Length: 248
Image 1 (cartoon, rainbow, N blue to C red):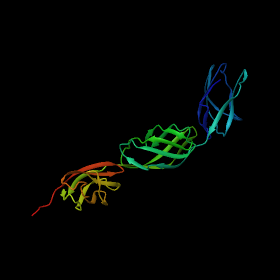
Image 2 (cartoon, helix red, strand yellow):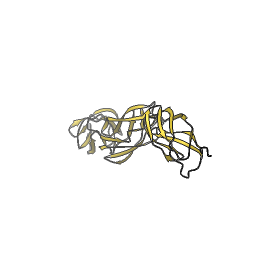
Image 3 (tube, helix red, strand yellow):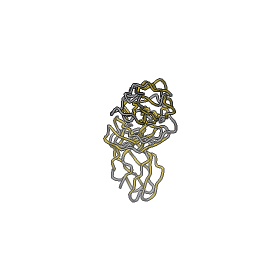
Image 4 (cartoon, rainbow, N blue to C red):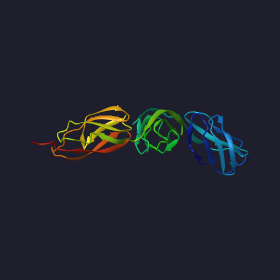
């Protein structure tokens, strides 16, 4: 006589179906000593809502013909989440997020605000999940649903990708050292600025302005250089040209 699911929240409320034979007229279904609420009954099945409980309990069905053999039902506590990493990512989604805690082994879904994703359970203490797309930039609550219930308490922040509007000036000598102002959007979380792949020192003035100093070219030669701004929300690029100064 199977029982499905065979585990549920310690707080009760799990819909459980017991299948077998001669089950019509079921008058009682007990989880240990507690009665469950019968919601449906046929000759081959009984559907109930589990009562609250703890640990492993025997489940029996009582009909006019007697009481069945017991089946085991396992009560699972609500999950506890200790941290989330990373705590932010692109609004488009797609980043791999790790959640650590306890009671995560039966996790079936992770909610990022109103969006839902299916996790990969690593262990009872850890899971990973691909962040779904966010509705807009900004923080959202993160909750994990397991057989033991749902637990909130973590925050993930969606970040829009940057845009580069202008560079001023747009050229400088191959020796570097040119002070360049980059304007655009989404610069608050800037992690790096590169000129043709060479890292440049930068200062975040505000969300729309970066103060950058062009690095020297690796070979000391002039030529075009793509300027790439990388933030926690993604990357954006502009154009800079290394030019030789006049010679006399």
